[in-house]
Amino acid sequence: MCATRLADPNDKETIMSEKKELNVAVIGYGLMGRIHTSGYKRANDFFDLKNRPVLKVICGRNEENARAFAENWGFESVETDWRKVIEREDVDAIDICTPNNSHAEIAIAAAKAGKMVLCEKPLSLNVAEGEQMVQAIEEAGVANTVWYNYRRIPAVTMAKQLIDEGRLGKIFHYRANFLQDWTISADLPQGGAGLWRLDAKEAGSGVTGDLLAHCIDTAIWLNGGIADVSAMTKTFITERTHTGSGNQEPVKIDDACSFMCHFENGSLGLFEATRYARGHKALYTFEINGERASIKWNLHDLNRLEYFDHRDDALVRGWHDIHVTESEMPYMDKWWIPGCGIGYEHSFLHQVADFLKSLEDGSPCRPTFRDALETQRVVEAVLKSAAERRWESV
Ligand SMILES: NC(=O)c1ccc[n+]([C@@H]2O[C@H](COP(=O)([O-])OP(=O)(O)OC[C@H]3O[C@@H](n4cnc5c(N)ncnc54)[C@H](O)[C@@H]3O)[C@@H](O)[C@H]2O)c1
Image 1 (spheres, rainbow, N blue to C red):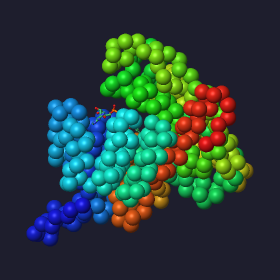
Image 2 (image 1 turned 60 degrees about the horizontal axis):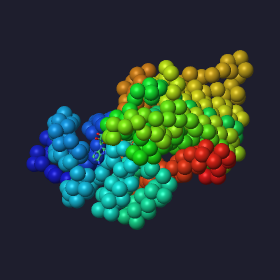
Image 3 (image 1 turned 90 degrees about the vertical axis):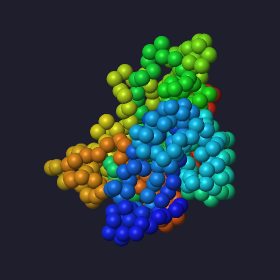
Image 4 (image 1 turned 120 degrees about the vertical axis):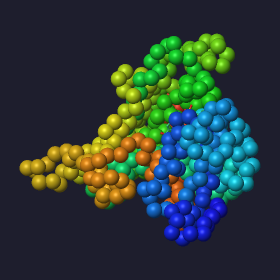
């Protein structure tokens, strides 16, 4: 990390330059490449941080597209091979925004080169790969985080606060769904740009590793470890044209998955994810029921947290519809005024800010690779339970 000091102490650029520069390379310029970059660009505008990300390199396999992306978003340089990025001495942090089958190779090489690593979820294709990644990261001792960004939506962060304060009391039930409808057409091919999620070689699994991984990460964070699972999966469309070969090929991902589980704290969990729920685009919801109180949250109305407290006076007892925009609420002192909400992209900006903050005091930016490996263990147990039609310990 290099810092430059300019001559005039009153110059705005001088003020900015007193921050330590963190040279970031983003690998992959798709959906996540864009949203992370937006976070790097804006985090210092809203958060008081000692480090400032510099958009050093954008890496994509198509040079023309990468150049266009660099120009549009303000990256200093372009690479078409991530290996070259890792060799560069002017890069401090590697941000992996590529499909799941490339996470392990890039993360391990980056860690061995002493780079900080920020990796998109799911951590890996499977537990064995995830273990190698954790080993490489921990041996190198580099700062790391995995982008389970929903933890940093203020209403979700506030749910964690309410649970940790003991307001719910003993927890009985945890319920989560993640519903989409974009793969219902049998004409949709599998593999390649935009459709790699349908190809098990690139994605590892279907909705379990893609959507339920988010639900599992949030659940473990809010409610503790998962002990065992009983799952069912379904592939509704079993053959699709592969973009690469042009042939009809078997579909090996799960289109839908439901599982129940026991949490280590004695509560029961029920999870469902599908890409076949007509009408739902990205409906992530969870509800937690405790002995004293319950909470509910829903991604389509992400600034709200619903809260019911049985200890309220009976005359006014009922569900509170809390608009999480007051400055006392998580992250919201950095944003607009009470009543004015924020959006999906802010959860990524919050993760950038928390990562930069973690560099100041050396604390881990959760979820770390090790935390994300725990989610991977649950994902693998869910898939195994479904395949073998029996309960599976995590
Ligand atoms: N945290 C979240 O909420 C969230 C949301 C969506 C996706 N994701 C994860 O982010 C990752 C990327 O997903 P996405 O939706 O951005 O996908 P995407 O298809 O939009 O983008 C992937 C990008 O990676 C590029 N790429 C592929 N192989 C590459 C290589 N070897 N070198 C350089 N670039 C390469 C592709 O060209 C593409 O630009 C996945 O792991 C996915 O699971 C996370």
